[in-house]
Length: 163
Image 1: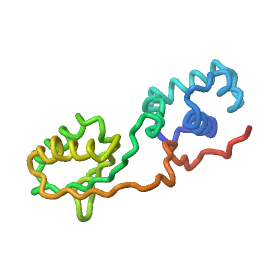
Image 2: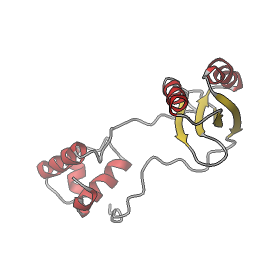
Image 3: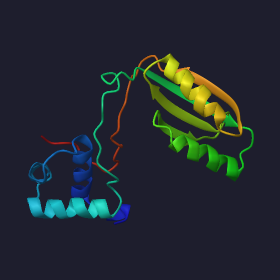
Image 4: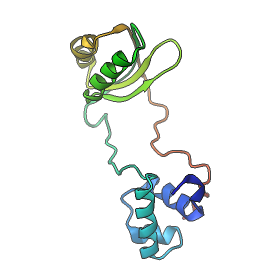
């Protein structure tokens, strides 16, 4: 199902599910003006087409004691395929790394790391990050306050919500 094949109802389904993935199919069908069976068929098509990647539960990091959020810029000695693959493989194995992006500009990678305290950050950097071969430079910036955090993607064709 290519993007051009999505109709208004598909966009409404995607928009509603981003807001509440636990919504029952009956409620979703009601909100997008379909009967439950065709609504479920559309959701299954959106899943099969890769538009819906997965369903998750978002946890509150502060309630779980994960109070330190850090952005770490990593520069490699060389941007060669082997070093990139080695770095990315090592980072994928670290549960405290929430996001990792290959970047343009001054650094090669930008990581978002969440840990319970400064000591845990130090252990992550000293025991794990610095042990990855080929790292030339590491710079950290602490997030003082989360101003906005959103997981729902902006859907360009999503109609305004009703109800």
